[in-house]
Image 1 (tube, rainbow, N blue to C red):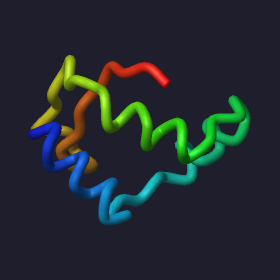
Image 2 (image 1 turned 90 degrees about the vertical axis):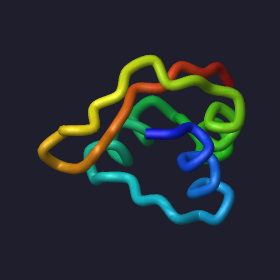
Image 3 (image 1 turned 120 degrees about the vertical axis):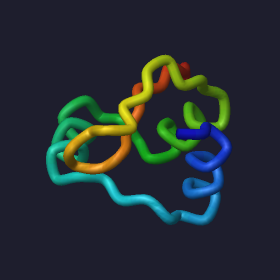
Image 4 (image 1 turned 180 degrees about the vertical axis):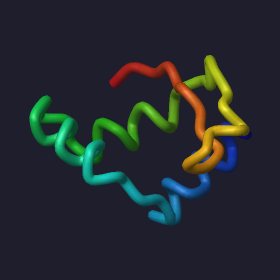
Length: 63
């Protein structure tokens, strides 16, 4: 997974959040703008290309 691809999807609003992710975001009062800010200044620290749901990764970033 490439961080540039992730950023491009966010720039074009071509991403989806799972129900679980939205529930957690709401519970922790995390705004979409915070997530977008983190995506613009983050790094991939773990990559999971064989995740059974779909390729995924763990990113590290600060808002």
